[in-house]
Image (cartoon, rainbow, N blue to C red; front, side, top):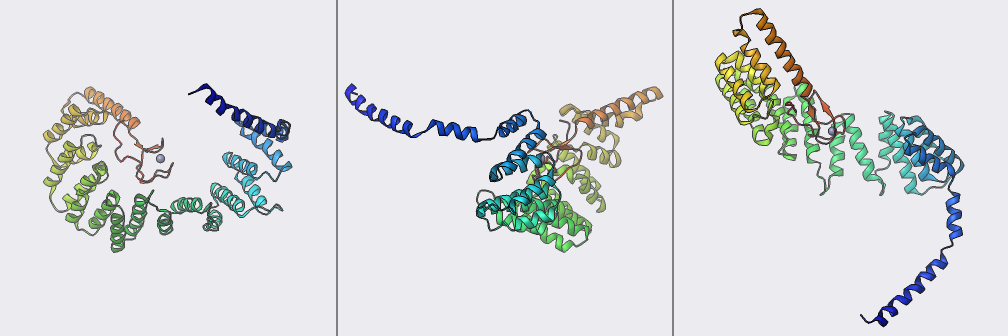
Length: 388
Ligand SMILES: [Zn+2]
């Protein structure tokens, strides 16, 4: 490019910078910066040092002096909630809602949303729900209010409202089909407890229509058939889990064998267990397999199963079970005591390592949950609690 052309382009830019600089009054900028109360900086410093008590005290002084700084009031409210001082947060937001300042409708809705969170955190679920219901028509916060309501209905085990709310929230981005199927399963579970089997079947059908991969629906349907003494249908239903998601088989295997037992087909039951154990060696089927083989098959078949498992997928649990299965061949009392001690040590080790893990958060438990109690995700906990 010609040097003259470059200068022709650059020169107007210098003029433009000069014009902008002339309009920024640095004195005003500095004055505004000075206007921010020192306590805000003190509060931020305290937060950086994790001293939330000092941070909230400093912030409280600022909002008392400058009550019109509503965003700062929200920050103080959140700080109170973080510190578990929910009563202070409720007081702050209630006062704000009835203050003399004229807030826009949007700001008033934001205050209500904060207040609903205060109530929820304080365990005042009814008050949180009624506050959120007032926000449903809010363009800005309606969606957030629905999300919070969905959580409340789940905690309350109000599955009908949860279904209604999830349907309102469902979009092309997030269909809620897993959740909707699980809510129907919860209703089916309640119906089974009341022996309302027809009702339970309706909920299970809806669950499967919503999410054909819903394993829990088939587990519950099998339970309904089992309770109605239709053991063949129960077995057929539970066998479908293998195609849906075989990881869930450990949850039904014991009951499945029981169904075979009820129709006097023990041999078929044992074949099924051994088949699953061979097909899915990564699953924790050892306890059920050992218990059933030891009770209904030959000692040789039992030891053969355990030995194969130990060779192909060694674990402390299988090692303990093989000691248990072979203990009777020891004659000396001392040898029997040694074997018992080693077995218990291995079982203790297995117990230390066997947990159900949530794939969404760090939650782990000895009990299996369909919904993680920590992060509230559905089907995020692996049903396989093998040594890990
Ligand atoms: Zn979780």
